[in-house]
Structures are given as C-alpha cells and as structure tokens.
Length: 68
Image 1 (cartoon, rainbow, N blue to C red):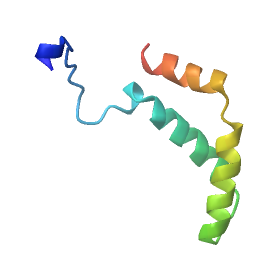
Image 2 (image 1 turned 180 degrees about the horizontal axis):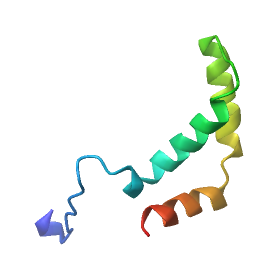
Image 3 (image 1 turned 180 degrees about the vertical axis):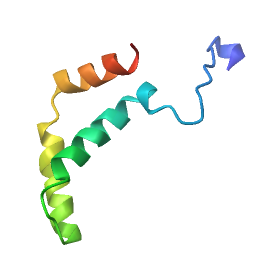
Image 4 (image 1 turned 60 degrees about the horizontal axis):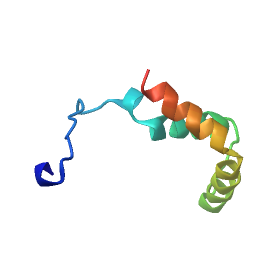
C-alpha cells in the first residue's frame, strides 16, 4: 500500500455508524418487519422490490450521514 501512496485507515472492530451499508440494511429491516413473510421466495421477491426503491439521493444521504 505504501508504494502506491495509499493511506490505511483503521476502524474499530464494529463501527456501523461508519459503514453506509448498515444504514441500508436498517432501512430494509424496518420495511420488512411487519410484512409477515413466511416463505424464502416471498422474502427474496420483497427484497428485490425494496432494493429498486433505493434511489441515488437516498444512498448519497446514507453515505453523508455515516461520516458526520
């Protein structure tokens, strides 16, 4: 890494507030919580549907919030 002049940044072992994907997972879990899904294929279809609802602006906000 040093020969390519890339700085390493060490994070605490578990730091969800620094990881934007944790925000997305939280959003998905909140959306799925009350759906009463019983079958795996139902879950997969619902996740696919919800993922299409995540827009560019939302992702940018999750990213910005993780670095405040």
